[in-house]
Image 1 (spheres, rainbow, N blue to C red):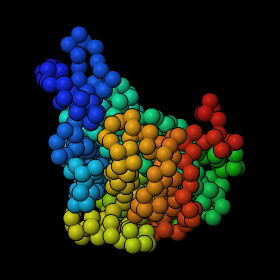
Image 2: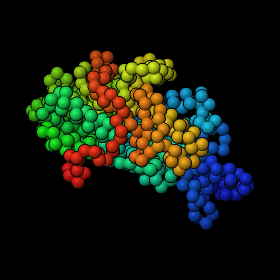
Image 3: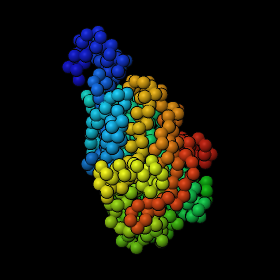
Image 4: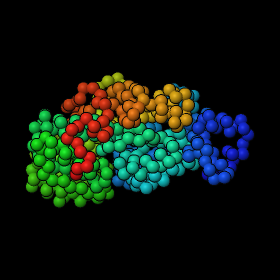
Length: 416
């Protein structure tokens, strides 16, 4: 990096001016940094580098490798249309290895060494939290494609997955109004998203006369769910709310099946099992519920074209799913942001984001310029015999993002 900085600093004035215009920074010899030196977005050639940062190994690879596929599909399609501002996308893939510290290290490498204009990826909230200070200090952009617990908004992050009021709260409203539940059991992986989500669920439950009869967690890379399932059997909840992530879902649902539980006895609603995970779980999930904003079965020409393109590229047996679609959509939103800004400059691109819409496979989405989330339609789905998911309830229109739950009088962040 130092040798690169000396090289940039020593070039002719004309080249230096061109680099500034394209957002490529330099480090001065006295140890100080120019305003753009935190990153080195380089668009001096006929391409622009974008970082794809996904877990290609570890327990989260079952989910995250599919996000990488969707990003590559979007990049290929955008390049076929001429790229972004006439520059072809050059993806730089890195493996987060299902470890938050690795995500932070790889994000730093992508921004400072690879000179990417933006990064797309992360899955667990732990990975996002670990990367957050990197993007702030180095002034780059992260597009985060997965539903999460909310209670966050960041100048350098765009959240294209659902926040709480677009996934978890609609699921709870559905369970209360449509399923008439009176009791609930909470099962989650032991990290940020499930614990925060369950804090929100418990406050919702208290305000809506729903009894929480149990709450169990396991580390992401462990599958000792037998004891927790025994508690589900003994407490007999009306429903289990599942915030387990990654391949731990396989162990949980196998244990569930071994105890003789299914959708007809004690149903589950999951917020991290999509089509890809459902296909990898070797038990009958028929009738189990999910809450997302996209399913492969969503009707419409845009989704039909997306599903066909994905299957043509990666195999007819490969399903599409919500995080994949949100990642795919994020690259098209970034293209629109850059083209509105008429530059790849990080600050200008961020400033241009508000109000940008895209006709995504899930339906029309629009960026909220204040909190950097997008308006999304909530869908409750039911797993079919073929492991695809069919919509059984829809919010009918996009829900404006409320990541801090300001519109819910029962929410108190100071309470457990």
